[in-house]
Image (tube, rainbow, N blue to C red; front, top):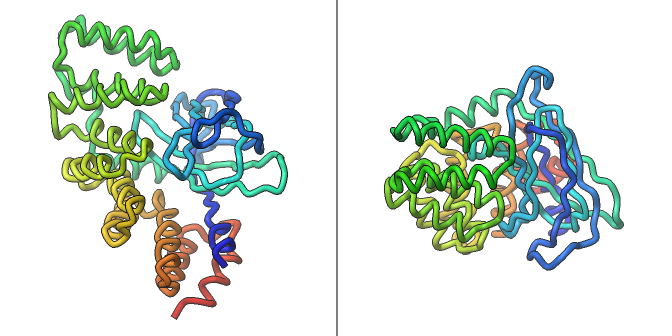
Length: 335
């Protein structure tokens, strides 16, 4: 039964992304070298959007269930992603725009032998609108007043970062900070670039420096919490994400990550409230959280509650490929 329940958790969320797909070599979840596995690939689309008429860029962050980031890739609407040598396991594909999560895909890779696994991801425009409205964050460029010289350097840095020229971006951002070390926005951007480069120590220092200048700044609070979660520093993540929720209670991402952090330290009773709040704030974008709650309830022997979560999930994703398995579980366990 346990195996069957785990297998039904492959989730296909609606999502989209930017630039041409680049091939990425995946390391094992613990960074222990290349692991033989399947090729994971798929197309990214936004429903109703012509890819030839948009230049929006997104970041794919492919994450193992342990929280460790195993690969990253930029992608454009209409582009194709491809990750090589993906071992069997449970993963999340996190889609970010402007350093904020807009959607997340939970998926299982469970193949008998090495093969090609296709997972197309389509993002609904309402998800993008919901992500923007729920973030409650001003454009970072508008949150700090800097000199004309520093503003020019900042804009050049952001242009370089948008082209994945991170080395140039870091150099320019450091020039801004040399002139004005109190620029918490620049510290935040610097932290995010380091985070994308898996330089977690440098990223953590930059985020904390930003928070020294502005303790309630939501973006570094959220990203620092994600970073601590990825390092399995769950107690630290809980402390940081609690502040993130206090700074912006309307963030579905902050509520979800706080709930997930509580799950990791076996405090499911505290996790449930935050996970349900994430669903309330973004019902469609966080539909897969119903599956997370279902697993939690199933593990606790509350199969009727698990069945209810699966039913709520199917109301939002009626065409899910594991619909028959979910319906069978619901029929067997719902009171």
